[in-house]
Image (cartoon, rainbow, N blue to C red; front, side, top):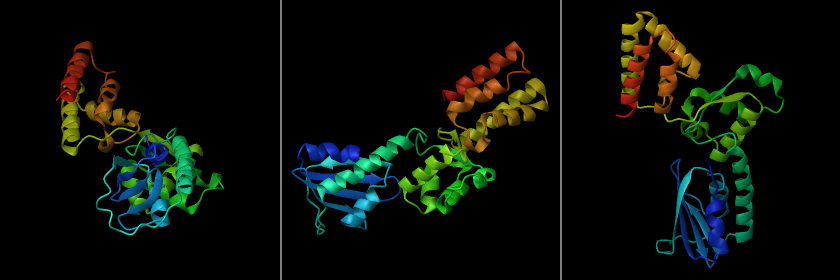
Length: 253
């Protein structure tokens, strides 16, 4: 699930805390929000200060945060920030992110765009079009976001709009298996099926991934049971039991 900095900063402000909220952003940046008795003294990123820093971090939705009461190390001159305005900006973003979470589960999510449906939607912007082209049904959002050239929030809003319009569809939220592990699974599965059904094994494996809705390169461990169930039909009881036991052993490695 995505979240906004509103969840992190609100209790610190309301409790009158003094210190620094340190934020590590998923996509190669970091920020510090400096507080004094519940008021924002300043906001810094690696390159920005003040209002520009606020506008930047407000659009972060994938991050970790930790609060420290130690202000040592804040040597840069801080540009004044209005606490009420800052909180208002983050609250608006928080409401947007809550809506986004109903459609986009995490940055591991994989989506695929359908260019044939573009002409039917008049509100389709150039940003939407670029984002849609990046949604190739293979890469998770954590790879799409940095490639897009837009802020994370802008990308998520665009995808939310595209999904709601039916131009983009959700495929998966699972983390793909490492290449060597995935290749070992598919190779062994193919060999075992060949023992049971001969050359038809290749067709069974192909159809199993068709039913899954994506190619082998996106296979997640959680999807192995679905693959096994998809190849059951031509197998007898003993073959099914043997295949099920092998897949169970594989997943428990």
